[in-house]
Length: 209
Image (cartoon, rainbow, N blue to C red; front, side, top):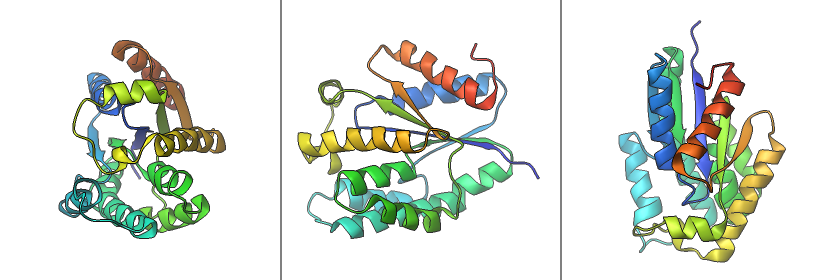
C-alpha cells in the first residue's frame, strides 16, 4: 500500500513558520514530489470555523479544557478530510502546526496535564502522527519583533505564557528525539531554510541540494 510522508512545522509564534513552510514545499516540489499543505486548525470548513472561535473571537473566554477539545475537533476533521487521504495517495503532507502545539500551548503553558492532552490527541488523530516535527526555535525578543501584525488570542497572553510555550517546545522535542528536530530560527530566511532542508534530507535519506 502506498504511503506518503508527513512533516509538521511548529514553534512559538514569530518563529517564521509561514515563510519556511513555503520554502520547504517549493523545495520538495522541485524534486518532483506531490505536496499537500495544511494548517492546524484550519484547511477544512469545520477547521476554519473552529479556528475563528479559537483565535479571532476575543469576546469568547474558553476554559482551558474546552479550548483544547476544540483544537482536537478541528484536527480530527483535518486528518479525516485532508491528511489521511493525501498520505494514502502517496503524497507528502506539510502542516503548519499539529498535535505538539496543543501539548505545549494548553499543556505546558496553559496548565493542563500534557499526558492528558497527548491521550486525547491519540483519539483525535486516529494515530496519524508526523514522521518529522520541525520545531523552529527563537528567543522571545526575536519572536516579538517579528509579530508585526494584529495578534490573535494566544499571542496576547503575555511574556510569561510565551516563555512557557518556548520551554514546552524544547521539552517536547527532547522527549521525542526520534520524531522532533529543533532548528535555530534566529538567522536569515535562507540560512534557516537550509537547516530545515538538511533535517528533512537526513530524516528521509534525500539529497539536501
